[in-house]
Figure 1 (tube, rainbow, N blue to C red):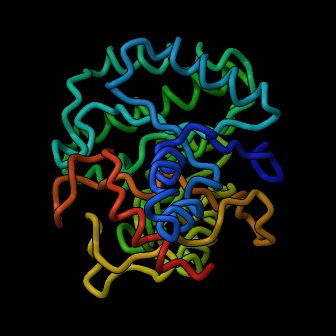
Figure 2 (cartoon, rainbow, N blue to C red; figure 1 turned 180 degrees about the horizontal axis):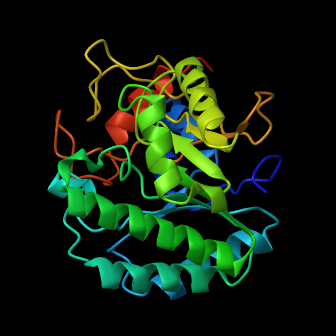
Length: 290
């Protein structure tokens, strides 16, 4: 469903608003931010959405009415980020199932791609053995819920090449019911170069029934830092523009899943996770190879 699909560009994005506010006094910088504003980006949903069904339905209707396929991120798994810089949600297992049910209901059968729980599988070593089993069961529950509503291409997040081995990642994906999903996502919110992600993705794919994958290329234009910093590292750049025509076997899309310019967390001078950081956004754009 996602391969070849039309992606949606938000005409009211924060990047667009910032670029417009700079245009009269900082025209060169505004033109740089246009590089971000002109591209489609994923929409994230989490514990900050007080009515998940209504919020998903509103976004879904707007995007599909424009003739595009929404790319949404479900990001509310219990013990999200193991309490780290993107933690803070207090949902329990039963609450998460209700949240997923609401998310699926909000889609209403309209076409969508859903990136399911960034970092949850690759980063579950922080949990106890029983906690890991609960996490796998909850992700499998979400896969089945989206599968049941129809027209949803679910991509289970599989971390990135520097995190888990292909064999370990494939085992976790299988346990989380990737069989009923469209595939898996890579490099969400990270900086690893496309070529490394493609090689890793194809290795994982071969172990999970040749499932397809997608890559977050929003900030990997110059690859990762030498020490693999992941939280607002300096000197990074926008990567491959979003496209659902990749020409790569098994790769459904390059996407900007983590909106470029949103902070990874209160580190390296950045604001809280998810907060727009215009200076960082500007640097990403200035260093892009286009």
